[in-house]
Structures are given as C-alpha cells and as structure tokens.
Image 1 (cartoon, one colour):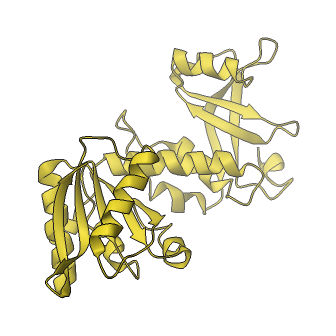
Image 2 (cartoon, rainbow, N blue to C red):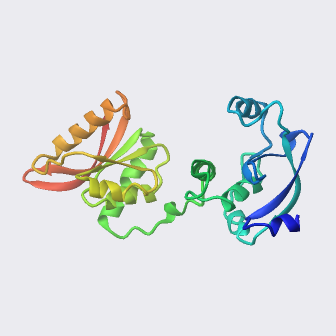
Length: 258
C-alpha cells in the first residue's frame, strides 16, 4: 500500500477484495489504472440491479469489496468533519472519500455534483440546527419577510413569490428556510436574477415590472409560473412585494389561491 501511495499524487489508497457480499460493505469501481471512479456503500438489491443496467456491474468483471484498510492524506478529515449521519444513522466514509478525491473541475464533475447534492439533501432533511428561528432581524423589511414565512408555514403554501428589485428580499426568505414552500424571486432583469442563483432554495424568474400598477406584475408572474407547470390551479401562494394603496406603493404580504 505504501509503495502504491507513493507512485502518484493520490488523495488516498484503499484495499479491496473480491468474492464478498458487497451488500454488507462498500462496492468499488476502478478505471484502467485501478484508480477509484465510484464507491457505493452497502448497495441494496435494487441498487445492484440499477448498476447492472447502467453498465457498472458486468458479468465477467469482479465486484470489488471494501476490505477496510486505508491510507489517506490529512485533507480527507476536513470532509469527514462536515458529514451528517446517513438514513442508517452512520457517518458515511464513502462520501468523504468521493469528495476528497474529486472536484467539479476534475475528471468526473457530474459524479461530484451528484455526491454534493446527496449530502446537501441529507443535511436539509436532518432539520439542521434551526438557527433561523433565533435570527436577529433588525429592519422592518426583514420582519415583514419573517411574517410571510410564518404565514406560508402555517398555510403549507405551495410557494412564496418575492417581488424584488435588488434581490435582498428573496435572500431574506432563503435565510429563514420555509418548511413547505418553493421560493420564486420575481426579478426585473437578468443581472438581479443571476445574483440569486446561489441563494438557498431561491429560483429567480425574470418578469416585467409594472411600477404604476404592481398588480400587473403579480398577475404576469402567476400566469407565467402556471404555464411553466411550476404552479398548479388551486395552489396556495404567499406573495411578498408592493401594492398600490391610493397613490402610494407600499410593501405588503398577500395570500392567494391560484
């Protein structure tokens, strides 16, 4: 193992054996140089069948079982420290191994993104630390957003629509983590929409703003989201934006049924 580890710039070396029941441990796949391409932890019969259909498991090729002896560079432990328990109640070393040996600019970028997505989804399902429940909201607009998120949670709203000229209101909604609602940020242009693409749970949508009659903006957004299949008839939505009151445009929270 030490000799192999010294042959290249590897993130680590693992040992494998053949002829074992891979449903009880890690199933490993390698390239022509016997470098790890994929690692599946305790695959179920359904997963094994899918791996056969996808061409990963071949009748003439051995199934490599994780023998449990490793050499890792210290960088791996930066990944293990951030892992959350899996549905089996375990910290999955396989996730850390895949992440430590790959990045989105490496040889297998799509597989890397899938691993990141699986870990992120697992963390979100765990419920997290719920820091947002104790967030320090100082401005009136932040408090307005919190009232909208509370309303959406109570109504189990399908979506929260945020009319935002700068993107800040939509970011506030993402910070407060709605439990049931998708977040659609209605933006006046691509610049604002592009700035929201990395915000948690926010889907930016570019719509023309009518600053004379904001109701037209809301109607255009609801129509567009319905035509795209993102909102179904009868869905409850909470809208954060501005409305016309007399001759003034003011911030407001609304509830509507599509």
